[in-house]
Image 1: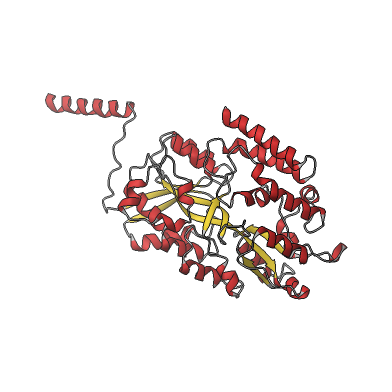
Image 2: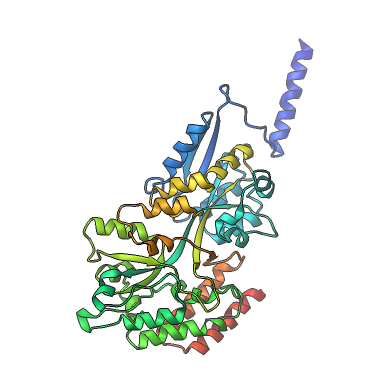
Length: 428
């Protein structure tokens, strides 16, 4: 009896010592062999693709259950980092909302290096349009994109028909885009039609400059932006586009100017497709006939080169079910997951022929071949690349963009200011 008691005491001491030193036993297997994976995400109620993805995966993996953990959208990456930094091993699958947040998670070793899994599972990274190269850290990938919105040109067919001008094409240089915008500008006052429209985000102008692949927005030198600012400010001066300061002070939303037939062309993200279709269906816009074409490009740059943002999935380093978690990540970020996402009207990261067919078959999507072809991208550059000081740099770029577009500073002086202030940030 004394021996039994002694053994029990020793076991308790060993277990207690283990927990005191931060070690944890592996999660016990369910008697039925089931595995529950916890997926950290945001906005369950308003996101249409979570449930279909989970339902489809569980249908082919009956012993796996996916449990959603909604951390809210406003401070999602901060909340996620806090939980993972605290050693929370209950989170298995991690949704990565933005590039600065991704960088922070990688720096703190909170995400699993996926390279070995990608290799063993023969995952073709080329299908993500070059975005995975842009989020690799020292050759290692910690997330795989499953959503990827990208920039296109929306245009109003009725306005082009009325002006008897041929529609824009899927292969326009910036010079051709500018010329077409000028040709489509007409009228005055309430009857004024603007040839193009730029929303007040800096990305609507600055990121034209990175499409040639020679520069990024975090380089620290910004002289390459000069011709694009010149083009847009000249359009503004000549009344081809609406005044930036007026748009800013009135908080005018880009959708409003397109809805009321006052804009012939507008560069905007693919997220606007489903919204526009919905508004037309509900009779909340004057626009009836519209189309899409690929983003304009610099001379020598392939048509279909564009800008984008990505949402990725990763595996928590603290997860005790990494293999199962990666299998779910592989499903969501793969071809089958992409088709499920596309059926909800959302643009997935993979845009193969089947995905494009699904999106183009949505009720209300333009029926012309050019609009369908516009969905095919050649290369997508991230709006904000992976950089540890991206947040600080963006503050400067936003501020100086405002000053240039409101003519409070000249283009040359503004670019010099960007160079000086960003280089100070980079040298810290």
